Image (cartoon, rainbow, N blue to C red; front, side):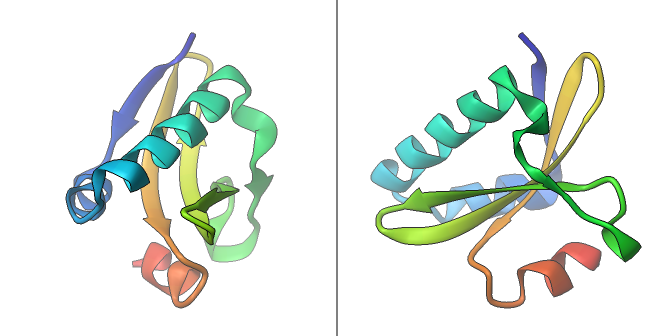
Length: 89
């Protein structure tokens, strides 16, 4: 199993979530840890970034991450609105 690491920006986004939202996020992270290539790889300015789509309390959420052989780096979480713009920063 891979080591999961979080960026500071990702940690800030998690602090705003409620317990039931965190449960859905944890399920998505476990799915990514089992199969990191499950997300869709992005091109252009976000080359190499994977984005996994999942439901969080009936709302579509996007989880952006990078991975290598031993680690998964969680870099962004949000709804589709302005997600990619904010991720570029």
